[in-house]
Image (tube, rainbow, N blue to C red; front, side, top):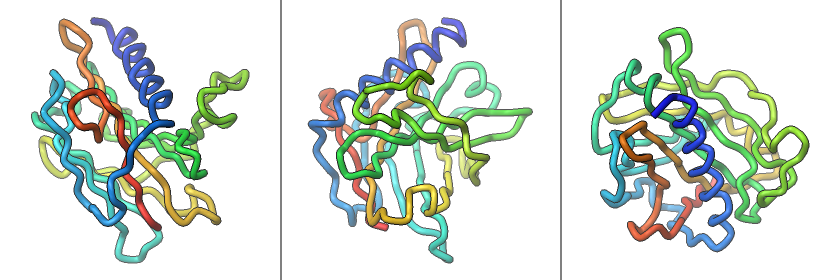
Length: 193
C-alpha cells in the first residue's frame, strides 16, 4: 500500500471515529490510564492511553502506548497517529494533533478540525491551519508522549474528551481507534482540566 493510500485510510478511520463519537460512552475522568483491547493488526495497535498534567500545570500530557515497537523510519513510511479532541461538550471532534516525522525528528502539531461541528465541513475540508509544533518525546520503542498547552483547549474549557486513531500500512488496511471495547464501539476519555 502506498503512503497516499495509508493517508486515505487514516482519514477514513478518523472520519469513522468522528461520526461514531456522538453516541460515544465515556471513560471516567479520574482514570489516568485506559487500556485498549488487542483488537487490530499492525504495529500501531493501541495498548493503552494515559493523560495527566505537567508539573507547572500549563500543559496537559497525553501518552499513547502500542503493542509493538516502531521506529521513526518505519513510522514515517508506514504509520499515522492522530489524537482527536472534543472541547465544546457536544461530543464532536473540533481539534486534532497529527504526529509525523519531519526532517528526521518527531513532530506533533495541533489544528482545528471540523470547525462547523459534527461532520459539517467548510470549504477548507474542515481542517484549519497547524498552530506550531508541540512538545513530543518517544520514551520507548512503543510509547510516545505529547504535551499540549492548556490554552489551545480554550479559556472556558473545564474538560474535554479525547481519543486516538492510528493506521499502519499492511497487506490489508491496519488501524486502531482507541479507546474502544474491542467490538468496534467507540469511546472517548474525559479529562478534567
